[in-house]
Length: 343
Ligand code: GLY
Image 1 (tube, rainbow, N blue to C red):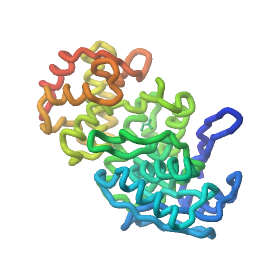
Image 2: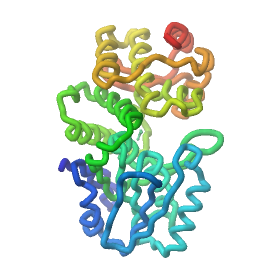
Image 3: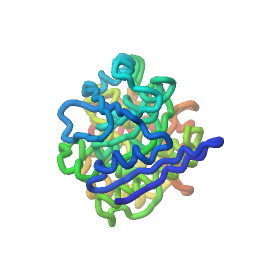
Image 4: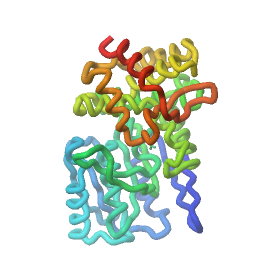
């Protein structure tokens, strides 16, 4: 097993937690719960129907199923869960165990953050994307009709169990989505992640994310680099009405961000080619920008990105590495989109 600590010192309380990555990690759940400061009597397992993962525990175990898809990522689902917790007698000393992909850990995490003004949560991500991104770092939340993840809380888990065995049953599309996020990590530190096997690579991605989160838990600055490739990705998800999944959109957004950085004189064409090789050749991901919106519509959508506080904001590669760049010239962005959309 690989163990990565997310170091989060607080005032008088150490909120650090461990992410365990390895084959059979799921079996460590009871040990993790035993080791908590005040061990819970009950667990509230939040999951979805049809997942090939069953959590077992010696504790009193209450199970709650939530629906699949973004349209279930709502405040109504939070209310249903919290009412279910109350009916089951879940107390503030008990623990929510979120078993599923990013949608499940986001929703169950927010229910845990809200119930009794906050009870502990353990994440058991069952997708690659969940393991290397959604379950790490404490972002939780749900959508509003006005936009994605507009209501939520930073609520760090008490532990995360990434059982690599569950990845063997992952549908191809889920693998692609995980690979889109994984490709991002290749550029954050500049090291050669391709040389690692899957388990080592998942653990290294977790380590990279843990280090960034530890340095800026509430995204007042540096944490935003984790959104590399996400500015165009979010616009693509919205314009395609989520027919394009997050990781697929991130793959397209990463190569676009590299091309934009080149156009702005920040990186060389060789560096763009390195991006293309990782995304297309190593991970086999598509990078053509689909015609789900016109270039002008993409620019408008990116201008409304919730990260954009100052004009068009991108996370871009450059001489000092990956960083947030505000006020990117909309004319340059538009010209590049004119060349690339659909081609
Ligand atoms: N998914 C980006 C972050 O956790 O900050």
